[in-house]
Image 1 (cartoon, helix red, strand yellow):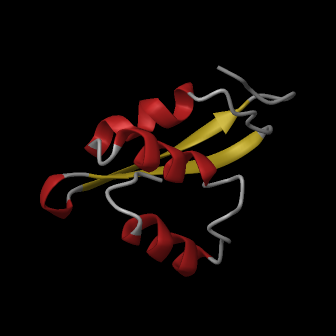
Image 2 (tube, one colour):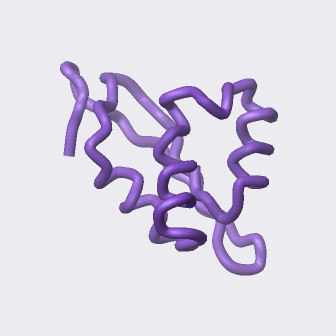
Length: 83
């Protein structure tokens, strides 16, 4: 998830039923804390973190200026992925 402000990931977590402290969204909150609002470039910052990603599919969502949005699915290979 993109980290425009904590209200965005907090709302998305609530809507998708994900605990805001879950490892699935930890990088969103870390990028916001460490880099502030970086708009769409938050996605590469999150994927560059040294965070193990388990095998399977996921959804990446980024919010930009004027409430623009982009989303894509990502598939991590068997055995997971680390940058």
